Image 1 (cartoon, one colour):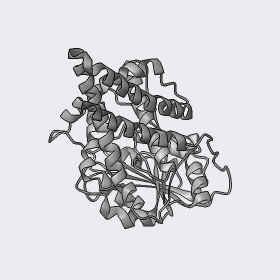
Image 2 (cartoon, helix red, strand yellow; image 1 turned 180 degrees about the vertical axis):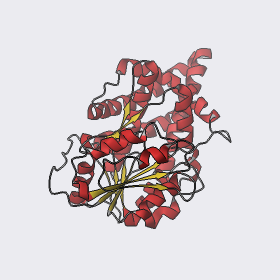
Image 3 (cartoon, one colour; image 1 turned 135 degrees about the vertical axis):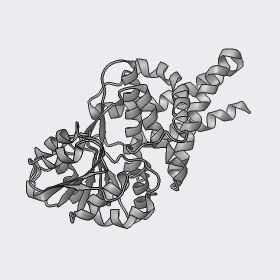
Length: 362
């Protein structure tokens, strides 16, 4: 009966094989001329006085026509000087800073979208850094494929050390699943740090993103768009279209961030996303159980080895492929033993799911 634990590992492997198979092998290049799409970049923020100028400077040097995009910063009740610092910025031709009339990131994004009349909305976070061809990449794929939603790549800016290698490996795996399943027509994940959507569709589906749940402005929106079969969702397979986001500075911050992500899972209605979530959860904790059980009873050792190999066979090729896309080396020799830490990592995340641990930022 215990061998039934292998089933979730086989499902896990199947998900990763589908993703690996569908990640584009070639990157497309953004068009440097002829872009016609009017774009609005929405930056919701709270207490980001130290970051907001940096992202605005990155957007100011985009190689996209300055009259074809606008930037709207929406300050969500900051207690620092975010609003004042953002208001003083003058490097973008079409630029506005608003105060959120409501509360929370989702209402802040809505305020920005309602204030704009652009055809294509792109959301990002104040602590991200887009590359110079960011907007051109979105415009190129939008004009070529006319998608309803564009899932953009997000690169994690990691330092050195085991903790950062662990973060990087996990992130590359998440990005691989995001990219591969989206390209397979089975999108389950996205990141609001780099997400494009038609303005009309955002307003149409906003009511389905569970406003009372602090997190999930991106994934709930994705699921709403996906639920209508005539909507097309694509992955932006252009390295120029990525944004760079900082890694968590400590284990505490990483666990708390992941807990915020998981906290919304109870409201998922997309069957494939639920199946993926249950599969990942089960494999992580089953591997932990088998690790401990094998230390006390060697009869569990063969099953542990089979499950451990299946998980690495799934993880490593996907992590490596996304590592090449982002120009990052994922240190395979360290990833394999780090797999044994995942169950304890999962327990830490569960602790931060306790009431009172959730925050504003996704």
